[in-house]
Length: 184
Image 1 (tube, rainbow, N blue to C red):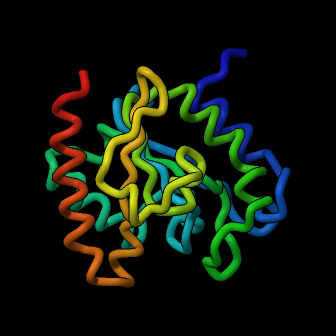
Image 2: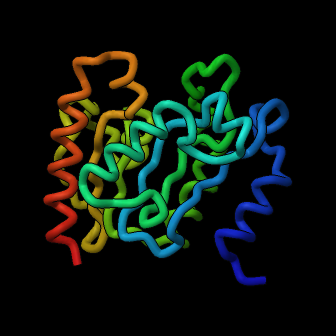
């Protein structure tokens, strides 16, 4: 059987390989399976756990608005999370939980083959650039390989909790929009 995003999603639904999978619903990525841009958040929240879709709560609405601000539609990009199940009480994912979910994310990335990966926040950034903080990396492009660029941005939820980050997030999205104009 050929591995596709649909097959991977089915496998994740059946997987019980971490403690979170025993208490939460799987939340697989969604969007354009051939997207040039892939956004990666930290973990599902309450709304995502309920609906089984990434970024559908308040942070997701804000992300949709930010995408529209640079001329992108949600269905033109691919959106996923590092951790595929909601941590209890929306706490930060534990290192073991992130490690256990990493193969799922890496397979998603391999299947989508984005040219630009946009880690949203510090947890997602750590997978790609572990030696730099989100406050130092946000709004800048980093070449991961010859064909893949990482463009870190603050997580939309961070800006919802800390209003002073809203202008940085808007600025970073404008920079992302400008950068995407240069990517073939």
